[in-house]
Amino acid sequence: MPDLDRMEAIVSLAKQRGFIFPSAEIYGGFRSTYDYGPLGVLMLRNVRDAWWNFMVQQRANVVGIEAAILSSPKIWEASGHLAGFTDPLVDCRKCGSRWREDQIEGVCPNCGSTDLTEARDFNLMFRTFVGPVADDASVAYLRPETAQGMFVNFPLVQRALRLKPPFGIAQLGKSFRNEITPGNFVFRTREFDQMEMEFFTPPELADRYFQYWVSERYEWYRTLGIPADELRLRPHDPDELSHYSKGTVDIEYLFPWGFGELEGIANRGTYDLNAHATYSGADMTYFDPQTNARYLPSVIEPAGGVTRAMMAFLLSAFDRDEVGGEERTVLRLSPLLAPYTVAVLPLSRKPELQGVADSVFSSLAMAFSCDFDVTQSIGRRYRRQDEIGTPFCVTVDFDTLDDKAVTVRDRDTTAQVRVPINEVVSYLQQQLASTSRPIATSFG
Ligand code: GAP
Image 1 (cartoon, rainbow, N blue to C red):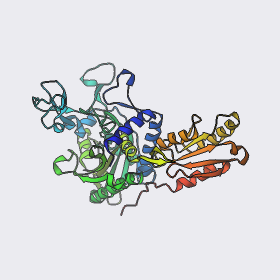
Image 2 (image 1 turned 60 degrees about the vertical axis):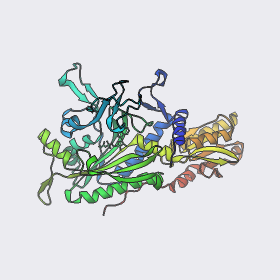
Image 3 (image 1 turned 120 degrees about the vertical axis):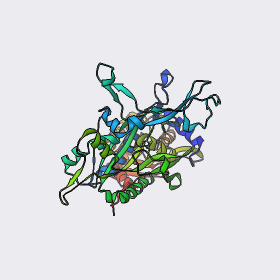
Image 4 (image 1 turned 135 degrees about the horizontal axis):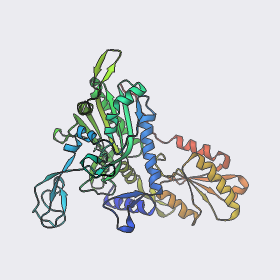
């Protein structure tokens, strides 16, 4: 199990090595907000790409969209978010701090007082004004989920691509929630990245597709490196279901403080299409020309968080072992997720190595995410690459000038092999071909 020490080590490594920084640190930070540094953006891209590849690219019946973050407030009226996207909030009368009632069991975590106000509903959506006048007519909200972009665009996407249910619409992007108690690093933040897909199916297939997507999504996390004993599936009790859901299964990860949600797979039935049809007056049905039937498709939704998944991948990958009698820290990230696939390390700064090292870097960088490091001893540089999860290091040394070959070192085994420069790209491609990749399975 990832323990609290591992959590501390990851938070520290993330900051020291440029994955995740506290936002606005020079001003003392900003309320559990984080910025993603050079390695963080590379890894975030990899998480998004792994999701997109598995959910969209590998499937003929799933397409993508990118909807606006700020759009009509009528969307949130219809979706139920304006009325119901709330957390119960209490104030401590002694110290004035504010908490989520369901998280504190009647005692203020700040001062220990039990003198708390009655709970009141607090809407989690961020409100803003669109245009130059800040009045009721110009109120808009930052989207609290990407999902509604798929629902409101359902008729346009369906017609534009002449899609027939079952089909899915997928989206990656930022969502915003004014969380009362953000925390646990990037587990719960007010601004975060979601990866969501709405799968529109004939109602009679909804239950089977629900099971199908639970299993697909579970395997995605497993294949990208999360061990089975750090994952579990948890069906929601009927009283904890969201207002739109007929059934939800959470994929939970064993965070250092216990199991927590990574992703929810919900059977949303016809709730959303129905609501938007009612509020907008638009026809949200699908007409099947083969059967002449017109119906509202049911929706199965796998909804995950990119930033939360990244944190889980980092925690699971963190390891310490011994190499050559020395302890090393190593991130055993899937090569699909590691910020850099390969690092080029010239043995010395001597000018005669420079040209050849530059040209090795240029040819590798065409094919892979590639780092270049010429500082400190080669041993220290290997450790630095291990610590950020780089699967391969390519060392350019003085023999390279004669034999036109480089040394390729493997992160996990630390084994080294000599490979001709003109074969190093294909050698690495071959090594990477054995990496486990999430593969879409067919429904049936
Ligand atoms: N459309 C359904 C929906 O948004 P959700 O369970 O509220 O469902 C889906 O969110 C996923 O988004 C969660 O499983 C989590 O991974 C991520 N997520 C939600 N709120 C978050 C927050 N405040 N910070 C980071 N990730 C969050």
